[in-house]
Image 1 (cartoon, helix red, strand yellow):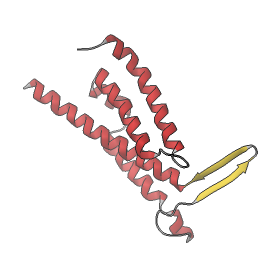
Image 2 (cartoon, rainbow, N blue to C red; image 1 turned 45 degrees about the vertical axis):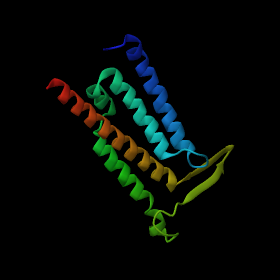
Image 3 (tube, rainbow, N blue to C red; image 1 turned 90 degrees about the horizontal axis):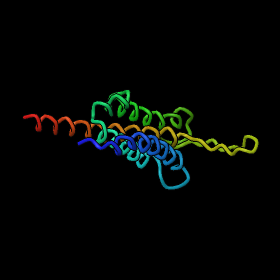
Image 4 (cartoon, rainbow, N blue to C red; image 1 turned 90 degrees about the vertical axis):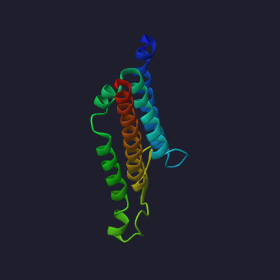
Length: 144
């Protein structure tokens, strides 16, 4: 049964949840949060779309297949560990930081951002791959 109210609010929830997931992702370097929790929040946003409009529409909104998203995330996580090996700063996954003031703005970035982004993509892709597969299995059983 389709709910008109839920369908109308699903798009708003989707946008708000995605923005919140990116906030959690970027906040995770100095405070609690990061790629895993942000990825779960983003996957929850796509779950709302799946419940409101179906898995087909949610997959179209995702643009890329969830397995490709997991591959990109794994590539980012591995790539984040390579700079210390190249510059002889430490071992694999020893994170490097750039912390400087550019005018009134404090800029603090490092290889952890790339690692957290990789974890974010792996979690989103993994959860959505499971969700879409469960949705397909459920519709196949319902049609039999």
